Image (cartoon, rainbow, N blue to C red; front, side, top):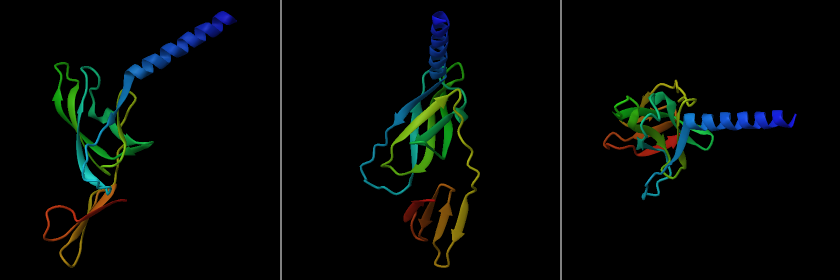
Length: 149
């Protein structure tokens, strides 16, 4: 019986070790000096080791236990076709704490909310992304106000 428990413990350890090799994560640091706390469009540059990740849909950004809606674009690949650099576009507070999860077993969630544009009579308009909303004045290039939905 003790040999069986030892075998089970060894098997469990090997399984746990192999699963951690399939997926990875790292903290995403936002270098912000503005102190702005409202949601804002951000782009992050993500570097990966060779053979670490092949599919951009297996890269996601999380804050706590919540996945942040994001768009992942491959910027460069290694010779074997795995991703070397990716750009992640997402809308969130620059003051938040974020983590990048990637690899086998990681799947980015699909967010089905379509982009909605609501025009106002004064010429301004609001853009809703499903995750955040932005209000644009008719005479300004950047959003005047933003908030999470």
